[in-house]
Length: 90
Image (cartoon, rainbow, N blue to C red; front, side, top):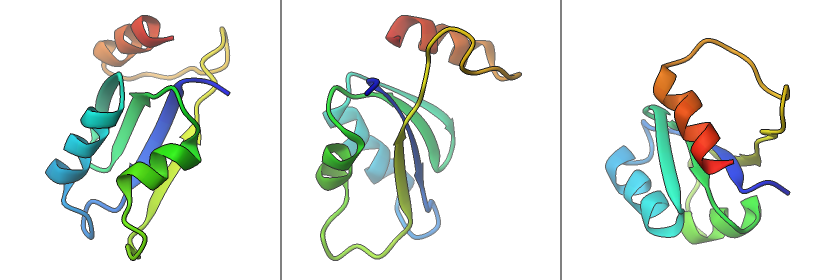
């Protein structure tokens, strides 16, 4: 299990500011790719983070998954700040 998680949430059904603030209160570091798509550094499992963030009665879409950040496991063209964040949080 990696500490880096990819978090998708329905930014129409869920208030982005509130959700991102919850992420910041539970994660070591948060990088917002765009509204509703975030990469975080969290020491527990995806399930544990989900339980901290989402009320039991919530019916909105949320996906949290481990992100493999081993060498050569990801590639792409993104804002340079994301690559810096990944190196600092790996």
